Length: 150
Length: 82
Image (cartoon, rainbow over all chains, first blue to last red; front, side):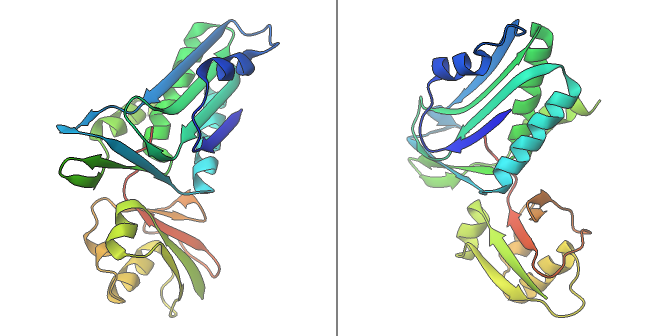
């Protein structure tokens, strides 16, 4: 179970290969990559800056991954989240999970991502033609996380 | 008692400071009490901020959570990562 917060980009192929390397129990690897779009809430976005709460962010993500491990039979999990300045098309976040079968890998990957969106202390600030603005939290992210509480 | 306060994102920007260490008078013993006290000290944005979140020692905390000497208390807007 690995959690990394970094400014640098990551190589998706290398990360996924390392996550499952040498583990013949793994029959499924599910991954999600979040990317910077050039449009949000009706405005074009030329740059984005991600701020976080050092210390709490790592702790919150480790707790989310541990919770996923309690709920599903997963072997490995990796979360990489970038901070600092990012531009459209850049990778922001990677969540990857290995397990014996796809059902658990898909579910755990989606769960980690949904919880990350509502519980990990990151904040986005976007540069738009009208000036810089802090991104507002979305209600749809709260409902996405809430459905796992059933 | 003394607590370390941290502010993040839009709140940090609105207040114009990343944090402060404050000496609390007796009677200020919860997150909600601390917020009210900070507002009274002129941190008005803590009163008007929408859906303000709080963490005590890096764990999410509601207004009823107790605070003690040496705690790290953070105030911030709803998170928007991912």
